[in-house]
Image 1: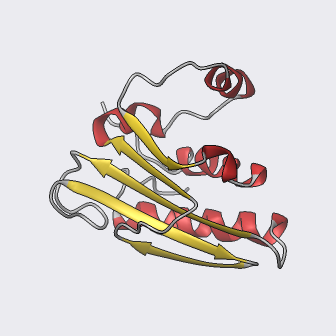
Image 2: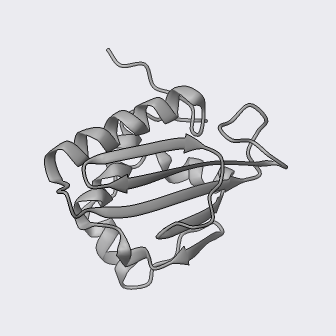
Length: 141
């Protein structure tokens, strides 16, 4: 049985890295290039890359290699800043085709989220990372 991890904790980031490596192994090629940073505002102390009330992590994919680290990074293909408590509400929920369709049609999340860069720059196969991470993220009541 897999131990689930609270959002944005060191164990959770270990799972994220494992999921990224699995996706990259199956779908990336030598020309794949993408970088991402996610920052959770209002995050509790002890979360990954915690600084001034925010937790963050980033990764850089170059071909079939990935470098993932705690902390923020500005020079990325896509940056996301999201409220930690709001993210908790969706972190354990799989993104179904219906959910993705509604989002594409403009359904806004019920919490603050901002993007730096083009959300469509993420390779299509990499969008599955949310569902993989949802399976290992602990629900909070």
